[in-house]
Image (cartoon, rainbow, N blue to C red):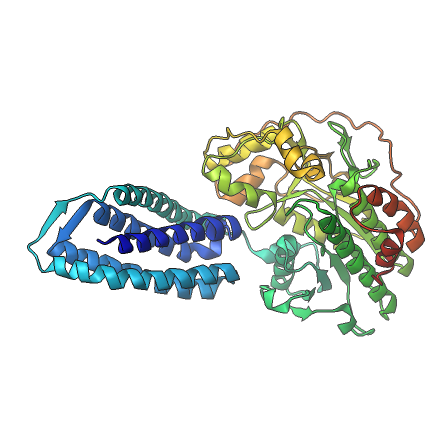
Length: 538
């Protein structure tokens, strides 16, 4: 065992650890994807082989039959890796960085075999024996690598078995509210919410037209029609409903000046293009459901909010307000418009819970700040059902809160997730640190919150399958219901602030409403640019 061989083994260990933590855990979330059951089983088997090899090579010299078993283990690892490559290509689209790392791992493993196989073959010619030895620093590194490989091997094995419980019910059942065949134009169809909605509509036999900027990245389940521009739709196209979910993600990075600009511009541009499409269609759709967020209300502390309350000025309110006003222009064409104010959407494939699962599963979860801020949430399938309900309910229009009827405080949410995973939640994220690192992003999305109730949804006879957090987590995480403390909801007090039902704005009005506040934060741009975006010409 030469120094060069140990350096190559160390390099293999570091690259494999990076691939596991960054790609498999943080980026892809493989442990919570039912479709990756076989891949997880392969990863578990390979990690257990690695753990055995690290212990064997770090502390012993295997001779005779033991050396031949070591060669067999290397061959088994190679077969597992090749099978894993095939499984990955069949079941998911690998990020470019993961393909690069896999190539480097394969090349480095080949170099290890060139140096290690002659040693094992020579030992195999000796009498059968296992001779204790030590390589000093390298033995310590081998012990640490073996521990890590064993930990992730057992974890992946458990995750593979758990994946059987994570598969949801039939997607088509989620849109049972649509009794007649519908043609639905869907923007944001490749996102966390849109992909599930497209799957449900297609499974139920509805015609889905998915607008996407990148057809190659559209991992949707057929049948569906894919377009890259609304101009591809002729004036005679039949569209029964439009669901607009497109927009730059608001919670995936710090709100820099360019990020704020993209957040607003992406929403106004797509929504304005939709309004123009409606204007040129011979037969306009019956309904436009346009996405928004509970951030429209701003930060109200413990105040209970419904669709009849106003909003307070902050960045998320400014964005949502401009977005909703742009969508309301479709009312001029006789289209029923629902502005869907979406809460924290829970699921293992995206959203807040997806980001929390890795730290919580490894015992590194905890409350955010004081833990007293409210979290208005909704389970993803319930959101899909609510969208279908909105399409099918002519009386439902205007702002509609897409949140479960029982919001909880962050401390209760933390406890519920940790209980569902059977892990401690002790690592609190302090407010001062978050504010210093992320500014308004932390203040509005992490440390602030809204206590929002779905008054209009429930008033229109919509029934939530998961009205409580315990029910939602049991469904999402494949476990038994847990108990959370949310506290009784007091009667709603009348709110003050921005009036809800403003007249449908012109481009100039929208610019005057949005631009001053955004300019004061030096984030979006000038009045002319905002007016262009409102018209859809920017």
